[in-house]
Length: 355
Image: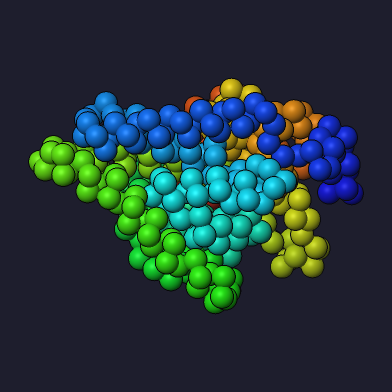
């Protein structure tokens, strides 16, 4: 009943066939692309600087949030070639559209599933997004401190992406490990293009600034650019599904009682939403994570308009909808969750501190 009603009510607002990018969305996307092109030009002709490192890092993150994400979901346009073209934004920020789709589509299918969602275990063993039982082999003693170090660790996201050897065979290991098959002629045919785009990115962003000024300072500025991109992207990603009272075991009901899992309900209860239209314009609608997981093929431009209706339907059906008016509230909840997940607090007896 929840699935049918939420779809029925939302498609009264956004008619089927019109759920793609609006003129306003394309204006923002072109602005973000033009900004990146200008800053990339400065980086490659004038050389690196601390201020430019900040600007370029945030600009590249903005492409990841506001351009390639909608495109690689097939939500930017009803025309496949438009989505395909703008989807290459992932490759111009140090990633790959093909490995991104392999991991991200798997994440959408199995959100917060400890064994099937690549996003839930991709940072292991350094830190644990999953709230494992105290005796689980994936739990490490250093996770007790992850509430303090998870942000600094996320700053290495850019390095781990740019120099990831998975670009050579386009087999995203997280998705591959849960059974997603990537041995097909299309993937094989894309490998050479993926490698060429990665080499181009490395030249423009790492080699070229060092050619202009081959100093240790330049190298530090390059790394700082990567840190700025990493923190902008990865921090916002972390907020979406890692917060207090998030559903970390969406298939529990079927294991314990045989009750079928409502996929739509699980998408809501494993996700959070914060802010409104302005946050959406800055983050490509990732602040509307609940709406995005319910309607991943809908352009993020529509999420501010459907969010009130989604909340009403959730309330009617007793589905837990996590909403934070401000991003800092979601951030604090994420820090608390990471601390408790690392400590195993949720698996201890109240007041006793014992398992």
